[in-house]
Amino acid sequence: MDLITHSLDLITSTQSSTGAFMASPHFPTYRYCWFRDGAFIAYALDQWGRSAAARQFHQWAARTVLAHRPAAERGIAKGKRSESLGPEDYLHTRYQADGNPGTEEWGNFQLDGLGTWLWSLEQHLKLAQRTPTVSELDAAGLVGRYLAALWRLPNYDCWEELPDRVHVSTLAAIAAGLRAASRLIKYSAFTAEAEATRQFVLDQGVMDGHLVKYLGSTEVDGNLLWVAWPYQLLPPSHPVIRNTVARIEQTLKEPNGGVHRYRADTYYGGGEWLLLTAWLGVYYALGQGQRQAQAVVRWLEEQANQEGHLSEQVGPQLHPGRYQEWVDRWGPVACPLLWSHASYLTLCATLKLRHG
Image 1 (cartoon, rainbow, N blue to C red):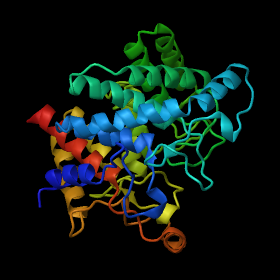
Image 2 (tube, helix red, strand yellow):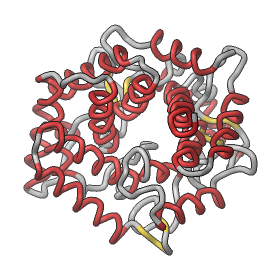
Image 3 (spheres, rainbow, N blue to C red):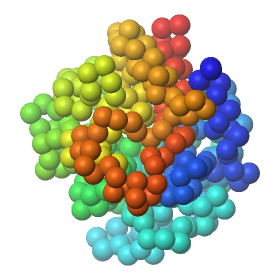
Image 4 (cartoon, one colour):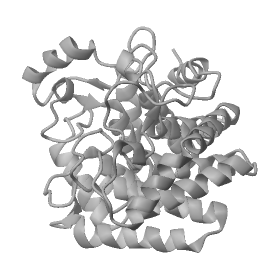
């Protein structure tokens, strides 16, 4: 099976008519569209010339943001006054296909997804060679103001955990989004805010020469791979990035296998996450690690099931005793996970672009 073609067809065939991407069409808890997942998925589609589907997602995202403008404006106002935010004062991290919020309780105050969406929107406009719509620019400006007002606040990380922390990967996503919004709407204040975020990470997010999972931690997280690319807070060759990747390889990567999220991960036992493994491959491909990146491609392809689907995570688990409780709660591990397929596509596209 050609996993590239299968992945592209899977993503586009499961896209909602509204443009939304359900994170995992067969996993009930993930039958929502996250800005984060959708942004990575749309970027992968753009890399492989499927820009029409990517455009539909970005238009869905813009419509959804603007539909919830009152909540964003309340958040901006309270952020400027240093007031606490309530559930009615922020944009959600995920919405239903029609743009309405979910009905169950969820940790919705997550800023990284919106930053990632702004980055992905700018990439889409470049790769699709089109100009933004009025609503896309309006939404980009609103989200830029929202991130500029709130980036210093603790919020859930990209794994939807630890809402009382300030997460380095989240800060990198916010900075990338602010830079993108600055270029899109020609507003230099966003650039200054992005640079303040970058300096904040360098001042408080580095320990022993490497980035840390969150401020005050000494551990790394696989999501720190994104600090170099796609968020470009620091270049891949920067000593802090090199030290961070080395730490991830030493503490989170299985020999000849995949990458775990972080050492204390107990979600479905804390398995190897396919999407993080793909992004380690992207890091290799961006440098001189062509063979390492190709090995990651082969490993990912070996993880596909008989239907060609890539799951969220596979074994071995860091904490196998914690696996069954999640199966009992939500069912088997999400499969397919569109974000896993998108990350595989991005790795293959990066290899093709950099090394032929």
